[in-house]
Image 1 (spheres, rainbow, N blue to C red):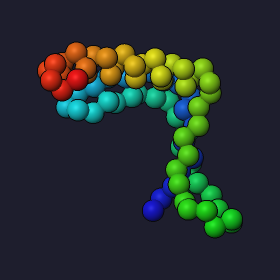
Image 2: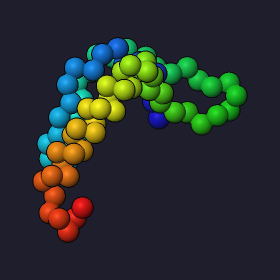
Image 3: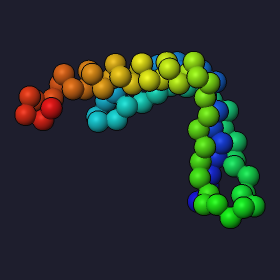
Length: 75
């Protein structure tokens, strides 16, 4: 399994289609170094607090729009 360190530099846009939420971002992506401590390999996503707050607001907007499209019985 390939693992990466992903650092979000900028969130450009977010949208949804066909059941997927897609984000357009500027990011620095580098292969993750091997862990010497024996921990399971994993991909790490890093962002500033400001970017995290923007992402949260954008996701909340997209999820609200998706909920509006669902039938009342599915909410």
